Image (cartoon, rainbow, N blue to C red; front, side):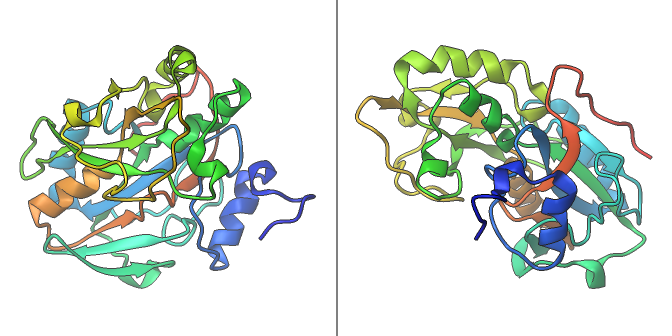
Length: 269
């Protein structure tokens, strides 16, 4: 899809967003190295307070980067971005059921929608690669695998769910390095929530992720699990909201915010 002179990893965030706005659909893992990626959740304003409370009660699951007030579709995290069409793919939910996948949700937008931008673990992948840590899903041209666990999140209003995690297998001797790197990025889910046996999380089969793609593990690989923002999507399903829009798993907003210890969430505008 990209030439050697213009790989996805080196694209500026604005250029990446422009490609998605033009209709390109692709998982954003490996895109625009060094920049923060964010998930999107848009709900009616009457549900926004409860969703914010859910995020505050489960900060590792839902690191809040920004909240766009009712009807707004811009963010200070990405200059010139249109939250209605600058992600590669969106999911549309009605009464807790997935009814449609779109690349542009302008026709569905309303003055009553409040939009949450949440941190994503795809953000820290460039830092892991620079540290020499292999990322099997990128090596294999796949989306990162995500699994529903048996761990329950703290409830807030109608929002209740079990934790969803992303998994990246790696050699055992690199796990401590990966954990230290990601612990410095709480805005991207921080350190792993579990290392080792998936059964301890209630995951029966790594070959059958709930979202994303299964990846082949090397002989000396150990599965490493991070909290995942798709957990919020599961909470929306459980809440049976009349209407909601989310990003499609793995298809994120690429922001202008560089990764680093000074990255902080923004206040609602």
